[in-house]
Image (cartoon, rainbow, N blue to C red):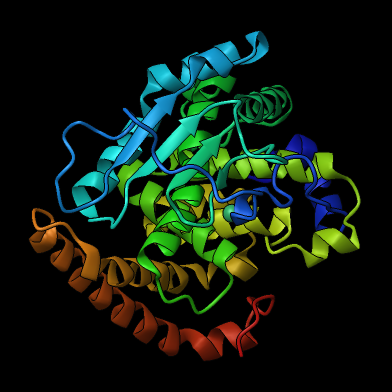
Length: 339
Ligand SMILES: [Zn+2]
């Protein structure tokens, strides 16, 4: 999230185009880590797995964790945020293969941040990466005014780290689903992975993960410094752009609830906000439709209902968008780009 009034000028600086995602993203979460990655090893698959489908499991390889990373690993483990995400997939989607989420320092060569392997069967969350996330959010809590959507009791680096980790796992899960299910993709895979993180967390966990991720990426954008050619050429959108994408989907998911806290306080520009309800409706419909052929038998009736609801919402939002397009194009909201 862009910073509060005290440091919003930092956001403006970032918006001026001085970004380079070096520390945490770079080649990492593109699924481009070296090596094919091991499949689930002996003893890592869930003992309750159905015979005909893959399951998501979470493994903490404690013996690999360096002393300086043990606290954040304990924080994430105790929160059960990874397990809750795994449970959602296991209830909802019939995967063709097992997927193991590994919190481990024993990673393939060159892996420094969260990654999904190219076959979608392993996600690595290196403990040192989780520590970097918590350090960045520790700086956020010290320097950024608390967004009103985050309760005061939750505005600390532990809670924000748990929330942001749920979003980050959602991103990697987006890669894993695309790879395992061979989902048809009409845009960049990284955008789809970010979109899945928004789709999953907003639906299942409310605004917290999106807000924490926005705060985290806004802080990272500042730390990155000047935007380089490599940054612009990345398969990821530039970091500050991702902040606004996260906020836009959140706004669009419930403008009645989020428009005031996000737009009227200056976190999400009005020039973008008017596009967000339809953008969210497209994303929500897109993911429900992508997942529909893969619902578990137990989830199929509810999943089909969610897909129908999302389709109806998309139709309604598109109609509303069409009714206001002239006003948007010619009025004070001219900052948006249509066409
Ligand atoms: Zn990625």
